[in-house]
Length: 163
Image 1 (cartoon, rainbow, N blue to C red):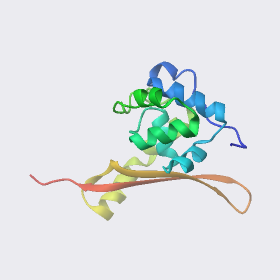
Image 2: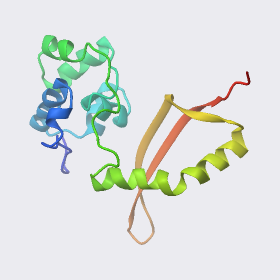
Image 3: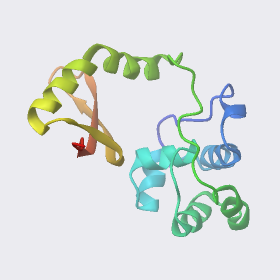
Image 4: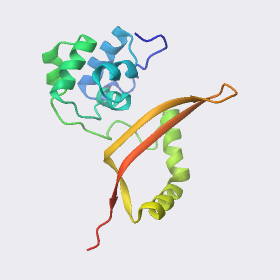
């Protein structure tokens, strides 16, 4: 059980998310669990678990069964709600208005061309996959006690085909 504050569903998003978001977030709040705690029990990455809650990631039948147990949600209800395919990228306005999400957007605005140039030099002409992809979020504390966010993005390199 979480000893820190947990992420809950922002009421302004409720109508823009799939039905399972309400079910999952209500159960998460009732259990007072972090995404990390749920992920550890589910055997998945915490970002992947959060993406499931927001309707942005696919679940397996095993995920549904385990989430049902972890969060004490009726299995048939959860199975019905998670049986479809994710509808990715439809939730937020662009540019984002939420400050943290906007900062991530701003990073790409400010450093996107630099990232592209470096990636092209190191890997050739192509793109980084967001499908064959993994990510993680870590917290670092420096010698002065300042906290730093570390976000790792790991995507398969897909070279452009010559035709």
